[in-house]
Amino acid sequence: MSVLAPLIKNEFFSHGTIECTDMAATRRFLVEFLGLDIIRPLKEAQYMWKGGPWSVVCVHIQDGECKEQPVDNRFVLSVAGDAEVDAAHSAALAKKDEFAIKRVLDISTTRGRRSFLLLDLNNTWWEIGTVSQAFFDAAFEKGDYAR
Image (cartoon, rainbow, N blue to C red; front, side):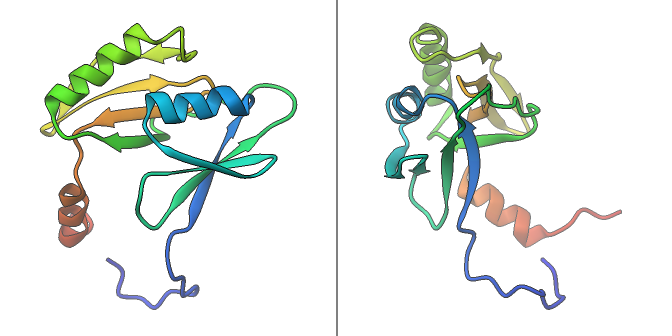
């Protein structure tokens, strides 16, 4: 972690945003498929959350289609283990048309973490995998890679 004093002394990471074209269909996908908690405090936005200090705001765009993000620009949802990854992958394939999922990639294992990627109805990539909070705790404890 940085030893320099930051210019902005923030309190916490509040939220980020994604786009959607159909609020109802998006909410159904986020709640029924991904298991996220959703509120819609504004006509043009709904907030998704799964505990913790930050959320993602899904902003409705009026015209056009949501821009597809590169696959490396994705949200990661953690599940308990390999069996849950396999079950989620099977569900994604089985419910692809029902939830307007555009793509479901194969399961892979990288650095001991099992996961797969899917592209949702709004061109947002999601990774469902076995990453844990301990992974990030250890990564930040270790710090930057040696050059």
